[in-house]
Length: 267
Image 1: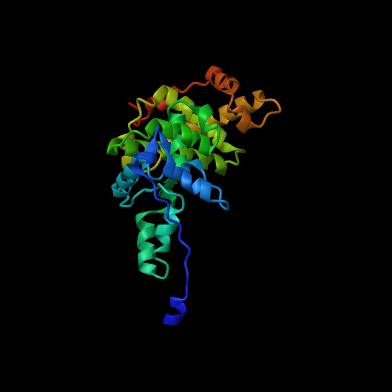
Image 2: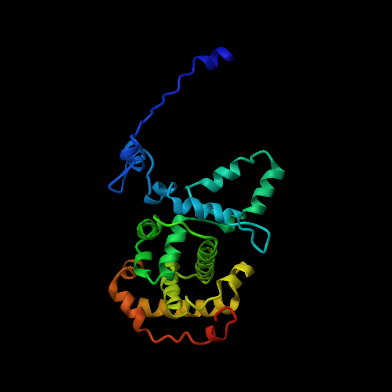
């Protein structure tokens, strides 16, 4: 057996990079290596940002935060990291159960989830509607030079929680292409209430209260009708990227005052 292993040859390529070339003029030379070398698997823009300090710190903080349910959120800084962590416990039933209880799969999200949700809350629904990778590139430009703190991490997780829960509700109601409608529903809601939402209460609750979710769902239904009535022969996800769609939504006469104004989660 030892003789067989002794004959194995493993090809190895080492790329030595001068420190001065790593980030000269904002060009990350190291990040371009997998693009140039990989001819089989598609590499996405978000895959190249795992080493950005913002996401490293976001991952660290989110993994350490214990929720009121006693579990943790799993921020997937690198694609496939959840499955990789889970795979460590294959054949270890107790360890696997503990990992899944500590990091429930429904509390796993990645950088593109974070980006799309954050852009909508930041009143940029058109950017969010351009697709996960383009949305990520725009979001990344705004955060790559920063380091998040605990408050920011909690708030962004809560924003994703509201975003994803609304999308799940619309899917259950058999909406076609619900992501587009979610983007604009969150945009309208955020436009009026983003500075008044008590995120600490929602974090403590660890779910979207029905008094927020139900009116958001009703808002989404109204927006869906308005957008589809005015998009003509265009696909809704393409129409949503245009100024025409944003202007249409801004002109829509949809009252958000009730019941949001009476919610204990809005100051």
